[in-house]
Length: 124
Ligand code: FES
Image (cartoon, rainbow, N blue to C red; front, side, top):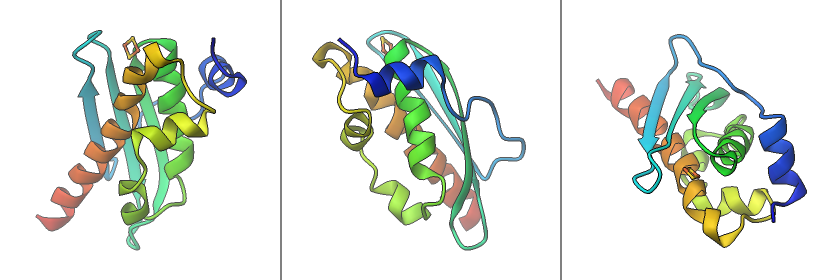
């Protein structure tokens, strides 16, 4: 049912945890299941994401997609990271079962919220 990449990222999630004094933090909840995901980003003065961590209180697919999204954004600029979609995260995991596609919505959404948080802090 799950691809090898999903099982790998679920069994051995990358970048679990929090970043103290993060440049941006984003949190989203999934209304369908009540699961919550929080993404922390560290961004340097050139708008490059140097670190990303996550905490997910959710199902296996939510954990795998959070893990993948942190891997995808590290080293990217804020502008590039805004372009990473939920679909791109699912594709990077070689797909998710149709029933679990809604779980992947959390990952990119939480990351985008963290970027928006960074932008608003920077602008203020
Ligand atoms: Fe809640 Fe997957 S069942 S995020």
